[in-house]
Length: 200
Image (cartoon, rainbow, N blue to C red; front, top):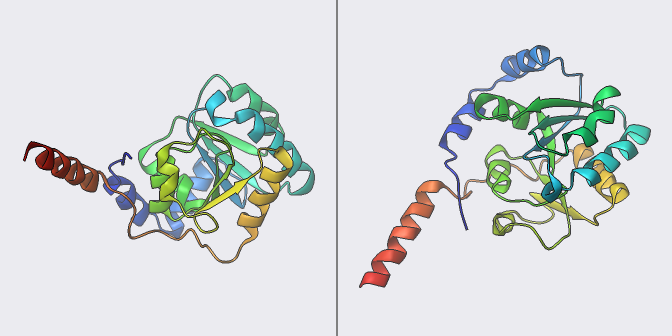
C-alpha cells in the first residue's frame, strides 16, 4: 500500500479555527450547509454519474445538504445541474489550505467510485467516507473501518443518497481523526526494512 505525506495537511487542519472556516465560507460564497465534500478527479473511475443521480435524489428530499466539489475532469458537466440549482459548488483542483478547509467543514466525503489515497486524507481529517460496493477500489481503502470511517452502499443513487443523509445526520462523528493513519515516513521505513532484509 502507498501513503502520502500527511504532515502539511495535519498542520493546515490544526490552524483552521471557527473564524477561519467562516471566512472560507464567505470567500467561496457557500450557504449554511451541512456540507459534504467530493475530492478527486471527475472521471469514469469515480462514478460521477452515480454522484449526479444521488444529488437529484437529495435535492428532492434534503435540499439543504450542500456539496463542495474539489476536482476536475471530463465528467464535470454531469454536476452542472446541481450547480445551477445551488446544491453544489465547484472549486476546481484543490490542495493545501483549501483542501483542508473543505475537509474541516464537511460532515462526510462522498466518493461513489474508486477510493484510493483519499482514505488517508479522510483519516487525518476525521471525516468518514461514503462509497459503494464495487471491485475496483485501491488497496488503500483497507485503511478505513466499515461502520466507522467508511460507509459502503449498493451502487444505486437512492442507496448512496440515503447513506449520505445518515452520516450527515449522525451526532457521533465516528470517523474521528485516527492517531494511526499511515504516513509517508512509515512507508519509507517499511520499504527500507524490506530492502535490508532482502539483501541480507
